[in-house]
Image (cartoon, rainbow, N blue to C red; front, top):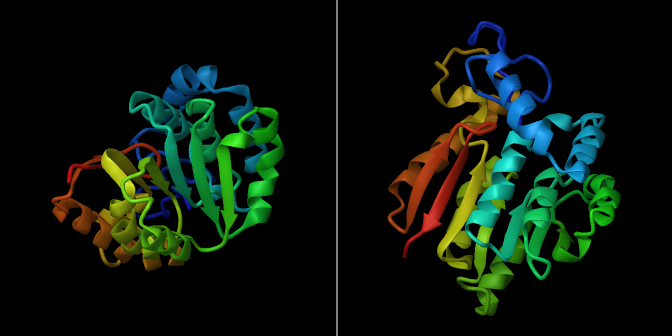
Length: 247
């Protein structure tokens, strides 16, 4: 879930519209980034998928266009070939990944809801990148446990993107650190969680924001203390923390 609505009161009413993805102080500045740098270069299939997703009742869960652009470039910069995505929704970030991968690149994509994925699938197929995607419906943890048990997947992933159930981020990290290669990158989405990570205790927060906030705070603390990785937390979208495995 990649939502960025901030409750009225604590932030003076900024960023109220559904799907707003920036923690920037100024809506105008965020729109400038989108209109100047993101939308003019957004691949047509991604634009089409973004517009389809906007009509979905859960559209607040989608990855923002600027974050999609960032992921696409990051994958190219690190020459990723074997990747994973946990939490797919309609597949906007998945499409950004698949478009960035070489023709023989792969992305293992996991989500508990195939129906949402199938909304975006015709666009992914039309873009000619469906052959790069191995979609698995169901919880990711049993799949990860099986991969670790198999032994042959240790250190085989170049890039992993996690945008799923925040209460399991720590559990994902315990497993993914074994599956990503040394020098590879794991990206955790929503690590600034609507800005709630710095909200005072009495701040008026949506129930789901309040519920998951402690899990996000715990993750951020754990990542900062993990000596097996280098980290960089960026205020892109709802906050993304990049972890580069160093040992």
